Length: 500
Image 1: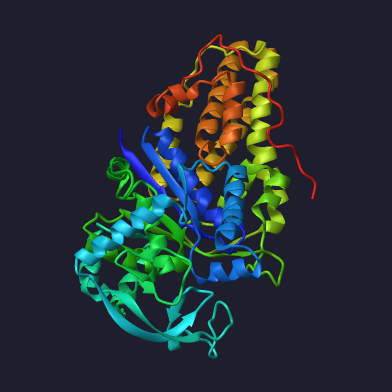
Image 2 (image 1 turned 180 degrees about the vertical axis):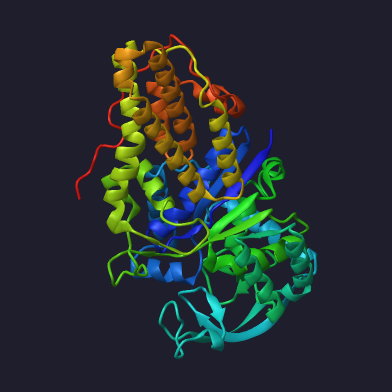
């Protein structure tokens, strides 16, 4: 059995969960579910980033202790992930003992390797970004993201010798051993190396809310340095070495493109220093606008995923978010068209086809599966080949397009064959048509399972295939799994039509 280890970033507890967080996490869940279907042993990690000065300040403003503040806000993420049917194996919190133990072990490894040193540092610090920024990053003297002037800070810190590791990282990226995707992000990372990067601070002297440096308790681990280590602590580094050795290295770190530098340069450098293998793939998806506008509290277009689930249901939300534009690129989420797309793709598409086919099976064959027919066998095998190829390169939008085309193909088959006429003229051909359609919706249920797991399970139940997971993937994608004489049920509406 192969292993597959996938991660999302850990989300900052100062934020409420919004559809940007949901987009990354749903995409990771699709890949995790697909690999479980394939028979891989999957570990899917997500969680919350809970340390740093910004959290401490926000807690104080809310008249709460930092831990109380983190407990409340982390719970909001966990609740939203439950509602979106996220199948993570671990939700890691950086305030957990498991994480703290792993961080201490990792930092000691860095010290033993000779890759860190102590020095004074003076620079411009943005509390909103939780990092030092340079003059050239400012816009009219302000942080471009938070529209505030940074503080001038001077303090004694520990630094990591990044420059020592950059040539090796460039070589690993160019060879493909460390794969950065999409390709334009690989070029961006290599460009950063060519520009030259300074060593970076791994600790803070003035911050109090965080994990103490194990060899100097007057220093707190820099929040983003500590956060990166969740990818190893979340699978047992420093606590459960057997599980860690089973799943590390990560098969894919999935994130938005704004944190690519930390993941593709700083994190690999620290892993090399600690003597640990590097992740196999770092995939940075793009940013998106909402109906052509940047997400903004001022504009009031920051969408709450729970509100979407209330309106459309979790499966439809997963589908609608992932089907908007090519995965990995920047794009626009047409939230204003969600109802239209829901009705066209889901209510009139998969939902209508499933209901129609099962109703015809009930009407013409008393809900009994007819004799097998293999008219679509070769064509479906080709479709599965395309589907697997798209999943291998994380093209989730292409997977959705393949599903749409197969759904349309089955709809077209109904119109061409006209079962209502065959019922009067050719019962033998009708039996073949109904079998082909029943098998088609079984294949569609399997294809949509990683994206819309609840709906897929419901279709399998209607097909009397509730035990479908007891079959291996190769058996499931073969044509002809439905056995003659088995009973199927009429379907209730999978996606009731919505009015705007």
